[in-house]
Length: 76
Image 1: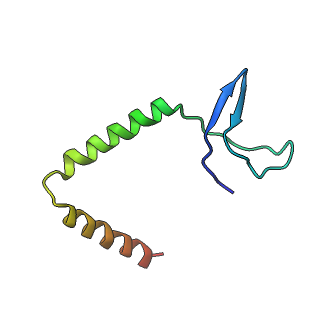
Image 2: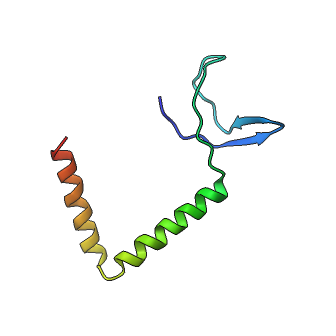
């Protein structure tokens, strides 16, 4: 099971904000990304995408994404 879980760091312990279906003492791997950092990276990515796509209409972009998606599914 792979899942994205938000957590709060308190007194040296990460506390998940929702129940996790794990056994006691079960080991997991964590990738920790502070939300502020994650938001900055996402905003940068969106600016980059918008700067490259501003000359295309929404319909053109949607069509290209749909075609690419179908192609990927076909090649699986």
